[in-house]
Length: 142
Image 1 (cartoon, one colour):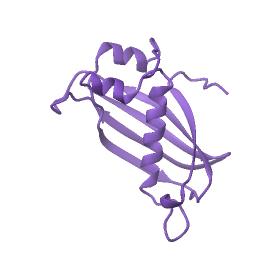
Image 2: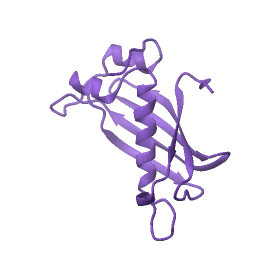
Image 3: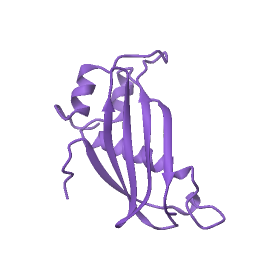
Image 4: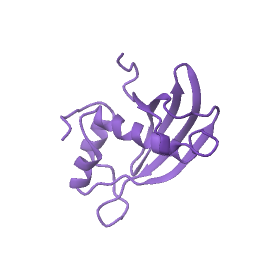
């Protein structure tokens, strides 16, 4: 099923054994990894990758992150991470996430990413990158 909101995309992933803890549930830190997978796939769905931007000297490090846990995920669960571009500013952007197992909402969260150049200096998000993120342009990933 196609995503209705052009700022949103969904990606399925399966919980791997090494992501669980001694209580047989997904370790809390793994949720940020799931959010990263969602973010990477969000960009890929628009025809570009992080590597494409890095090759041009544009990087998007996470500068803030938040997770709210509601229910535990467990080994071999099939999860869906729903990723939404919630805010696009001059030098930063914010993604919001919903992690689901079927109809159950397991966690929500957000990350703010800053835009920097190869030297780690704050860098204005390039117009072509903004166009891709806002849905005005897509290119084949590669």
